[in-house]
Length: 112
Ligand SMILES: [Cu+2]
Image 1 (cartoon, protein in one colour):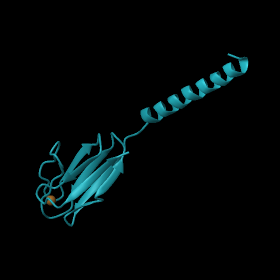
Image 2 (image 1 turned 90 degrees about the vertical axis):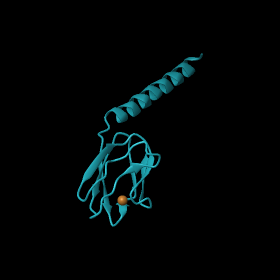
Image 3 (image 1 turned 135 degrees about the vertical axis):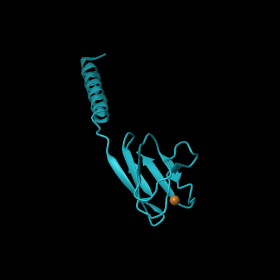
C-alpha cells in the first residue's frame, strides 16, 4: 500500500465511522411524537398518518355513535369507544385498520 492509498483509506474509514455514529445518534436521540386521529362523520381523520416507529397515536371518537380501531387482521384492537372516548397505541410498524362496527371506515398507518 502506498502512503497515499493508506491516507485515502484512513479518510474513508473516518468518514464511515462518523456517518455510523451520526446515524446511530439520530435514532437514539429521537423523541417519540404524539399524533391524534379524530373519528368524525364516520371517518378516521386523517385517514392516513405517517410517523416513526415508537410514536403514539391517540384516536378520539367525536361522533355520537360508538366506533373502534381494529387492525385489519385483528392483531390488535381498541375496545368499543363511545362518544368522546380516546384510545392510544404506540406504533411499531405500518398497518391498515378499520372500524369493525362500520367496516367501510378505514385508516392507514405508515411508518417511515
Ligand atoms: Cu365505526
